[in-house]
Image 1 (tube, one colour):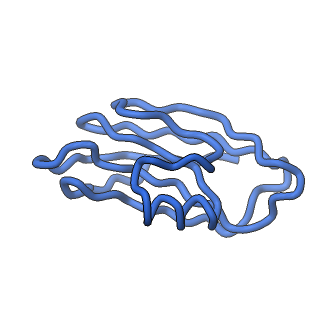
Image 2 (image 1 turned 30 degrees about the vertical axis):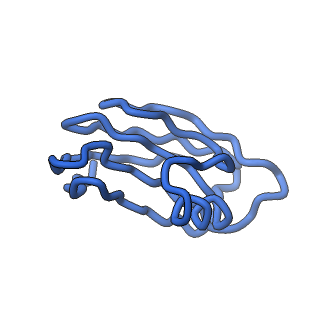
Length: 103
């Protein structure tokens, strides 16, 4: 499981090129402090970059948790890149995060 440190009031943006053939992914995130996760497409990423946590077009994720486990089924017409965003919810402390994506 890769591990990264996310600075306070910042996020980690992981890009994946394509949706797997089964159109389903599972992800797991474990963090040393609460984080928020989003699974987004290009449009959702643009929305996140302009509006922050106030994202409406996302496929999965959880607010303010230390452990995130979810399965996401992508629509049949979706065929572009997608992103796992891990947002540090703290304004003052860095957070260590481990993450894994399975198809």
